[in-house]
Amino acid sequence: MAQPSCVPLDVAENARAHAAAVRAAHARVVVFPELSLTGYELQGPAVSVDDPRLAPLVEACAETGTLALAGAPVAGEHIATLAVTGDGATIAYRKMWLGDVEARRFRPGDTPAVLDVDGWRIGLAICKDTGVAAHAAQTAALGIDLYAAGVLESACDAAVTDGRARRIATTHRVWVAVASFAGSTGGGYTEAAGGSAIWSPAGEVHARTGTEPEALARADIG
Image (spheres, rainbow, N blue to C red):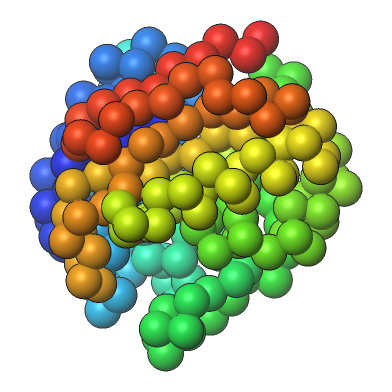
């Protein structure tokens, strides 16, 4: 779980920060926060999967054999998770449950998503999805080992993420991994929560970062 610093709307600089996190993580999968490639800038332009500014992240994934799950607005007016490998980027998931402000621009996705990574099935979520019991249930019904989410919460709401993650883990007996924005970003989030973490199916925290940007939470769940 990575929580890199973010420069508002600077996809090129943010992709370089993502690439540095991938190289530092030494992990098969690295998860990033919601809208991590743009910041929480709800009027920011869509990022295409063939955007040349993503090249540093693609190159880092090629070097390390990593799957990076990064956040960006995409065409069709969706908040999405991009799956980035050494072969390029694809849209892996579109956020299904939007906040009120988000719904002024974006449209909800209509289906849960699961990625198969080396035989592990990873269900995907973005922020408010994690607070909707039906989302976790629908995703878990597809057969998952891990529920992975990119989120953004204010520092004063840091406990919200922990409570949701524990509930999902213990209800569905799956690992839960949450990458949470740290530092500041758009939308009035001048102090984001950080605290990215990984929970076991028993609801126990296996790894957690602090509140500072650039931190990584790592766990071997193989």
